[in-house]
Length: 202
Image (cartoon, rainbow, N blue to C red; front, side, top):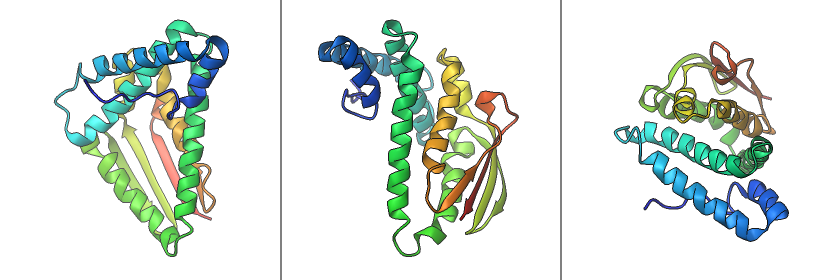
């Protein structure tokens, strides 16, 4: 039994709040239990041979698919909106944490180089991505993702409509930084030829 990834007061709390308001706490707990069971089935199904970095991305896709498909059975017309609310709140909280970190001396100068190293490791070939880097300085970073496993995995999981949500998570977090601008003109999940990233220090 894998550790439960969903709790009604966890990162998907805004979604479960809607369920509680409509049908009570007992229904919210029931759906949460079903979502955890769905996640366990998905994450232990395909791609069990992935390396540790790629497995992180696979688990995130299984998590998103599990909560979405479970809630969709009960609230098909509302699930995408509720899910987006939860993702927005999570992203804004992440932005808030990053903004607090930036207040430490020297962190603003370190942020973009650190982000670039993370993109090359977590979002590079080891993670199942294909990317291409342009300008990389302490003031500005440009890189493109040309192949994304999130698009591939969400199609395999039967939820391609969830792909753009991963892109929006970047907008909610990086797009709300106080000291940096985040620019992107297209994403693979929304039919673009690439996901282009540009971050600049203000």
